[in-house]
Image (cartoon, rainbow, N blue to C red; front, side, top):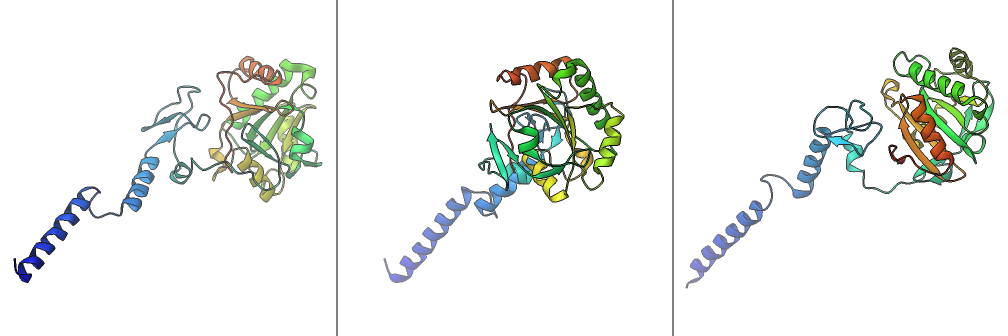
Length: 266
């Protein structure tokens, strides 16, 4: 075989190898970038429950556990979902993946507190998220706490502490929170929390309650027993009897089977 034929044979072989390699991946895309793009598209088209992130669907609908409307998943969060949980700055306690920062906050009386040290440490707590200009889920969330306060009587402030955290600290001053709480006859043992936005952002991120728009915040109710390291969450608009049952289980160091363990990602 002469030199010219050898060159022709070599070129043909190179073209054949290139075609076979291209057949193993989608045409016109780098495999890494293509998979990332496909992953992003899949995430953008998926839906998840704000209360139970493990409940996912490819189409809109309701959560099978709490009946909340499923929301479109954030592609960025979906791509990073396998990354390990890292403590946020200032965290002083980690319980069942619950990262609790000891940020400076203000209560409804204007008292300066440290969130973990003064409100959480060694206590059993029930935490919800509200803002005073809300006209949708926040009044029912506060009404639920009001009924809890009435049903549990003097246990509130002794055996369990109620905490309502503002998701709109720029608007919700201590005075506004106190006036809003008075509408629901908030008594001792029910603390409303606000503070500097930077500090509150740390807190809301740590508790998995940060949202880009205040109206999008979840009606989640986080219930924890810091001394036993037990944390769980349930639907903040559930029947008061059901919420009381979860609280009693958490006080005893048990997690109710119908609740999901809190997973927090800063």
